[in-house]
Image 1 (cartoon, rainbow, N blue to C red):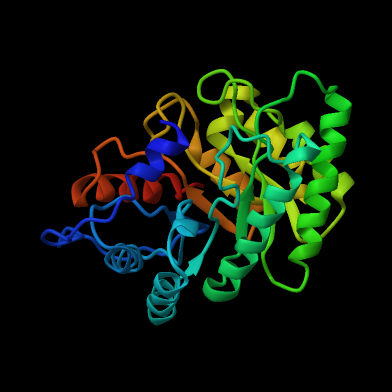
Image 2: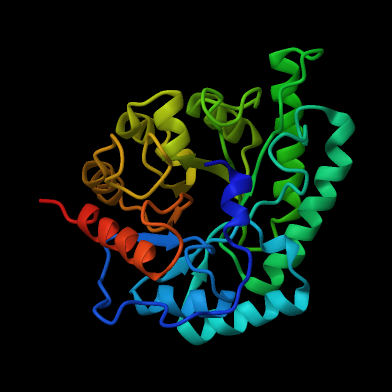
Length: 294
């Protein structure tokens, strides 16, 4: 499931019936897991209500910039009423393929997106925002493209330094979903974060992508711990909730918890049970199971 499919699942539709099964009860999680908008075919405020009722303290929504400031302010009002925080939305308006930062000729457009992201943050108070590099540019060397990314991301971080928002760079896998994307491995992403050297810029460690690209999740997380600002979850294969693939999520979550992580882990994945109350509850049950360890 690619990012476009995930966003398409978040299309608003009238709420139909109960959003949560009557048997659902709040659970106190060890970590700050954040459901994404799109687990229910319901208005966003109703989705937020369902997430809070299930015991979650945060959510994420890649497609937030599509909304008007007035709509975003309405989401913030509901968040405040429920005590919810927000994780990421995606900054790049051109999508992951647009060569936003690898080529200087596209930097001006990227900075427009950054300016809009700061405007949105000042309304909704999200903790982080996802940035991507775009496709690699064959006519430029790897070294030059990396330097261009560092330059663009440093400027973006400076534009956000008066806020509490942190831009997080997302490596993407090229084997299954994002052929041609520039930053694939956590080592490369961490190098860029180190060179940007700004508190408003860190690494997004999406465990779905990194399991496909390099595996060895726990060791890579520990290696780059001081560079990571955000996590996203998705089992492999299939990009669905924990327990549907090969990853031992209890061990991974335990390792993250033992490092003292206080940030958000976004549920950027599909639902094996389908969109709707039943599929959502199946997903939440899977997180509850994975959140338990000895």
